[in-house]
Image (cartoon, rainbow, N blue to C red; front, side, top):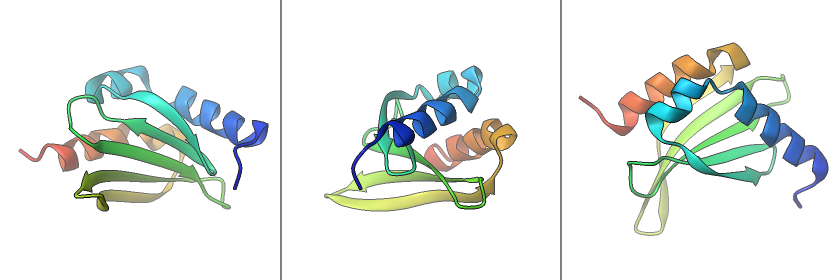
Length: 100
């Protein structure tokens, strides 16, 4: 599906709904518009991305993906996420990326 103004608006809205401290904690950068959502590069983790997509129920699906030998490995997934839950989901994603 081609990137349209509508998909860019969805991505912009998602990015604005993520609390600043959550973005800063993970060092997310290089936002990319994807089909129905947004992909963010995680700063300190090599080849790790967070993908946030809008579902038909007007909730989000958040996935943490690591690239290993040209293969996408999903290390965390949260479904039915409301916009006010994104900060907590990013905290959980942080723990999935760097287990303690």
